[in-house]
Image (cartoon, rainbow, N blue to C red; front, side):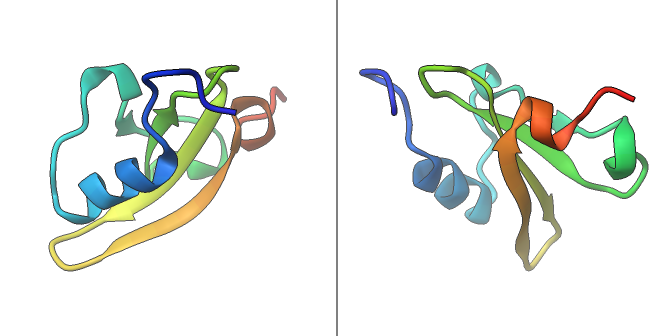
Length: 79
């Protein structure tokens, strides 16, 4: 469920695929923990009602690779 005025995931993917920089509210950053650490992946937070949906991706000059999506708790479990 998306709150009024929130951007759906497809708009975020479209922006990333075009090489656009995301609005800071999406917290786009390199991943520095868990199984994703030091592998070049990035994550951004898709703004939903729960504010807990994450998209993990890899982007180079020619390709956008969507690696995983899910709740923050599922993708980054506490050890």
